[in-house]
Length: 98
Ligand SMILES: [Zn+2]
Image 1: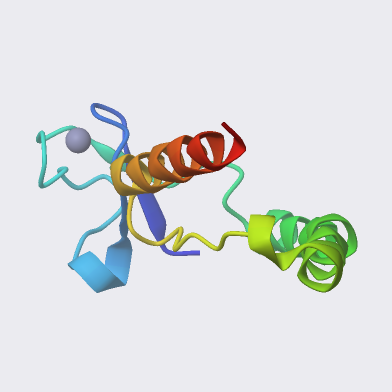
Image 2: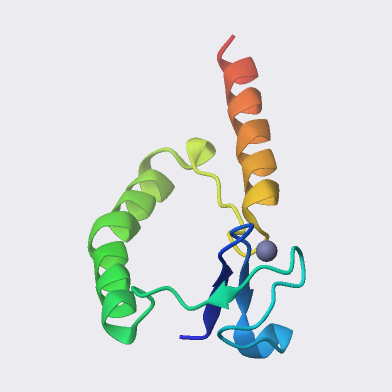
């Protein structure tokens, strides 16, 4: 549980990946970096359990019944990039429907 979040701009960093520490300064805005209080092994285990139980069956369903409407997005690329990809996919799907 190495994730740090800036209290100033909200950017997240991997502490060891980016050479940053809890209480250090955000490289983007200089704000204070803090570990989320819910960023624990127990919370992560629950998120993974819920993902396996609730999300993976939906993916498997669409892979087998209608793979053309299933899109995979790399969630490691940052929220702005993810938003751009999702917006483009929605636009593309809406154009297909017209
Ligand atoms: Zn910041």
